[in-house]
Length: 361
Image (cartoon, rainbow, N blue to C red; front, side, top):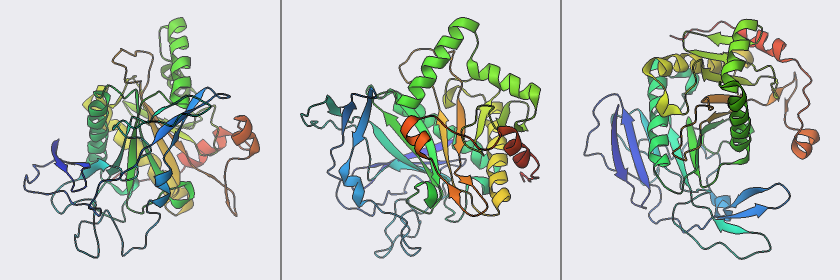
């Protein structure tokens, strides 16, 4: 993998990645001339025992611009400012113009609850230069490169002392909050371990202490034996609707043998994970005959420098629930109580997805 690190005119970092050497004369463009003067901070939620980030300036960020304004387009002109340059590259990663977290320290306000600066980092990952593409349309070797890029960014961010956890994710579709049409995801590097991965960490640690194995490792083995919820399986990776699914078409993707994070994956694991990723996204699109919206989140071990044999890198897909007439979102019991109420069985949804034939190309 080749990479080229650049600096944008407004001070943000841009890194280009490719399977081929990248022209060192490429320069980093930006739709913005000046740096953003934002100051995010965090406030403690005393009833939930968790931090909340505040970045009010994000209200001014671009949301679903018209096609003639595409900040990811590679054509640079006064009428079409761009975030990425012309050139022969495959994937681009740059600092988010409207971050919820920033490494530069800012004074947090003094309030009735504890506060702290939101010292972290938010990056945008442009999956491809093709504006109308998607994960499901990318070649397998391009998806494998994307997994390598996630690994490289995880390593770079984990080396920053303030960073305690790194989350790679994709919001796909306006229904789940995407703000730009071009295929892209994001990486958030947090100054704390957020509530969801923290709960996963506690569960994995307790299970490993009792069984000497990872909880997801054993769950994968059980799903592989049962077969009824398995959507895709190859030598080194699986995709399945978990027995405990909270969303009707929820799918998890994971290597069969545990890896703490992207950087710990072997070459064959990256190869087979890319096949699982393409299969799942193709099935989603084929099932509804449209680019189907989802949140894809990749969970990794905390970046505390300690070994985490209990941890198992994996992705979880959260699509909105589609009825014959509408998309259903979280209801009162899910949002208010945190207790999910499922009106379908994981086995039935897995069968629907499994029965769809796809061509990986």
